[in-house]
Length: 260
Image (cartoon, rainbow, N blue to C red):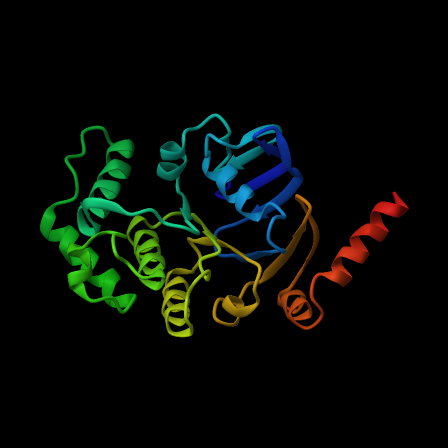
């Protein structure tokens, strides 16, 4: 069975407006893909559709993950299957510590695999959490803070990557993780992603800046305009965008439309 995430001709709308207009993409474990495009082109909509956000209605197409069509799955089912989304704007949850949140998430995944599972033992969890926090250069007292409450932008994104590290998904979607980060926070977050990347993890980095791609090196780059992926290539495509912007891509895309 393939562990790939396969997006097949996905059309989606929100509040009656069509945003995605036929998106096709395959992300396999071991691969790093970058999805780039200006604001408002549908990148974050795609991320939300992949995780099953109820505000986004899929009107056509299929999404397969590990050989299953996941469109009818709830977000928590998709998560337990091995799909992860790092949010662009993580929400604060007062009263819930980072450690308790992560332990609950791990236990939910374990129980889904084995209904008789009694949860990760606390000493084992503490050891795991310390290892992951050290990898991300996070002070251990961070685990005792309430999730995202009073966090800086960089701390929120590092907390998202800490979730990624502890849950160990098969495919991770990073929705504009670079948004609002200074250069030091961006470096630390990127190094965390790079440390996690490997043969068992596929990553889809959603961004409209080249900046994060200076740290997280994708093998594949895709350009989204007006709800469609209009061009794909290697890392050189992102470098081309940095130098020339989206106008040339837009003109090439319009030329293809004219030919059709």
